[in-house]
Amino acid sequence: MPVKNTIALITVIILALAIPACPANYYSGNGGADADSHGSAAADQGNDVDTSGSLPVLLDLGADYCAPCRQMEPILEGLKTEYEGIFDVRVVNVQQDQATARQYQVTRIPLQIFFDANGNELFRHIGFYSKADILAKWHELGFNF
Image 1 (tube, rainbow, N blue to C red):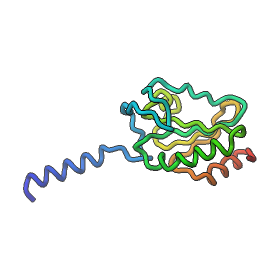
Image 2: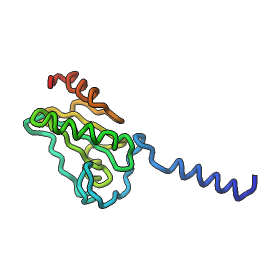
Image 3: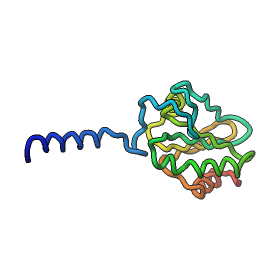
């Protein structure tokens, strides 16, 4: 194999290994400035996600580059609407809100964290989570919605 081809192949392999795999790794680099449904536009300012209150909370932490995170968006939006007043759904883009990512020690995304109404963490799940699985987990945790 000519040297040029060998160098090109090595470069491709190195780049492939360096690209973050979703959900395997959380990208800790600076996110873009565009706001979306996963969080605020201000990078690293933090949402001060308060998980205590009168309702249990489902906190989803994800990012735009992550395909499973994007697949979760319509599910989370549907849950927000359907279960309004029963449990809160909060969504954070970890690229744009790195302070919250650090607060919850995010290492892989998408990450869903279930909290009771007092803000106590009950369960964590990494990866895509269907609506049926989310509701089943709430039921397993003792919440009958």
